[in-house]
Figure 1 (cartoon, rainbow, N blue to C red):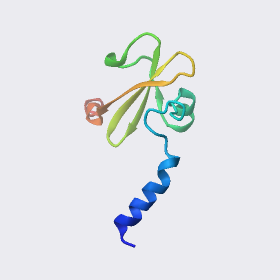
Figure 2: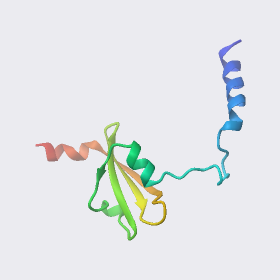
Figure 3: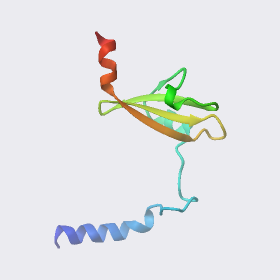
Amino acid sequence: MTKPILTLICAVALTPMLPQPGNAEEAMALTYEAFEQSVPHIDLAVCPEPLQAPGRFCRLTTHADALNVFVFSEDGDQPLIAMRSWSGELLVGLMD
């Protein structure tokens, strides 16, 4: 069997197991509880200015030379509501 045909067979076989777009019952929001247990992060006292708003809090991660800020709602299960990344180069001046 050639590689493209094998890839197609695998894709077709796995499709029923994957959540389908638009199916809200199968979609799973990232809650802060799941994030906190699985992602190394730093708690931020305040969100960066472009992400600030009432009723939210932010956490910082680093990955692939980027600073990543995850924004969670304070309501309910505290779902992820936004995320933004900045270049790690922003830290260069702080290290001098």
